[in-house]
Amino acid sequence: MKTFFRIVSGLFLMAILSACGGGGGSAGTNMNGAALFTTAADKIQMLYGETKTFTVGGGVPSYAVSSSGAVSATLTGTVLTVATNATGTGTVTVTDKAGAKVSIDVTVGTGATLTTSAPASVTVGVGAVTLTYSITGGTGVYAVNSSDTSIADVGFDKDRSVFVIAGVSTGTTTVVVKDNAGQSVSIAVTVVGGTRSLFTTAPSALSVPSGKTVSYSISGGSAPYSVSSNNSGAADVSLKQNGTDFDIKAIAAGTANIVVTDASRSSVTIAVTVTTPAAGTLSVLPAGASGSVGDTLKFNVVGGVLPYKVTNTNDSIAKVFASVDGASFNAVLSNVGKSDVTVIDALGTTTTITITATGDAATLRLSPSDFEVSEQSSESYQLKVYGGTPPYVQYWSSDPSYGAVTLSGNTFTIGSVTRRCVTPLTALGVYTVTLTVVDSLGASATSKMNIRDTLDANCK
Image 1 (cartoon, rainbow, N blue to C red):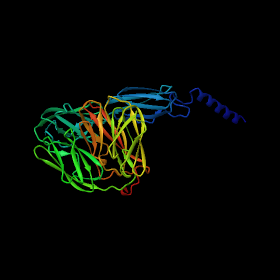
Image 2: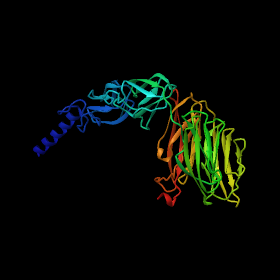
Image 3: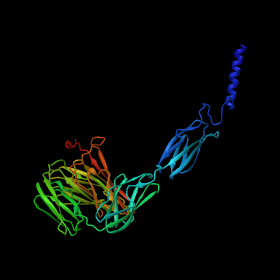
Image 4: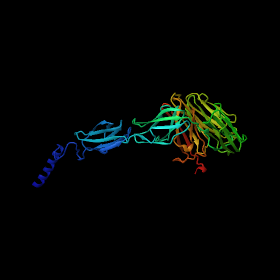
């Protein structure tokens, strides 16, 4: 009995000592015995502008955090958030209620110097383009700009890690490559005299269904330009008033050669095949679009049976002007809101689209800012660039396989293709291609071309 009493008394004494911090315990250790810790390693590397989260535990809650150098840190309960604000190094220190500390050393940036494969000086001819140059090292997203785009301009891929320099006019300028942290590399560019060959934005061969009109642009060579067709019964061509844009109108099934000629008699030939379209499903391309007040949106009608009648529910939002046969129409956006446009074919079949007008803005924008096309579509599409600070010096598509893009003045053109087949995650879903334009001050604007899956058998 005495032995049992001694055992119980001993256990009771140990419990009292443990509650008072005795019994071999130490400051910064909780009752479970776990030392203060974070889920971050002692040394970590982060990119400039990056944010990461970690967990704090152990020790004696509550916790506090401090930071220095190239990082800043916050602590909410047990969630530690670390953000970088400069390149270099920084330290994050977590402290518990008992004064125990855990430190995290952070290195910000790749650690590599920003470099490019371009030489320190480059010579390029007017109308010519340099070799492709790559960018490595540095931190984050790269930017490449010319200090004088009237002398030389630059173009780069969608990841901005590869670029070229194009000669615009004779003279000298500087191209500067920068990273997200402010590192830069300068390239001295000399543009010498040269002649840019005559070319058009049209492919060398294209197929157009009868009743359709497609538009392209001319540049290079020596203005003025002229256009002609060797079979206007199949496809006719006309030069627009600006002298650089032209329309090819498919008249009837057959073939025609469209010839573009400049003042020096250089020429480019476009082989056109005009097909007889099946009646197909009546539809409008694009199938709905949005833009800012003051914009003009262009639509084409396909399928069904000509002629078409075009009606509009709200002229105060969008004023609609249709061609004689209704195969195309323009919508001038007048006020903020939505309007439904209905197309009726000769057999009484109808289809309706919604046009959305948003507030006008002086900022750079592409119009329409959002539009939908079918995966069966093959024709080119034109968008307009508004606002910003012209000239518009850079432009690209997130996926050129759905139409190469060109820019002439403020006209942004997505080229024609054989077919825009897509395979979205869900049947009848959309695949979005983002179109981007950049003005002379580096501001950018985008438009979304949403390609709708139609379960077309030819796309399987």
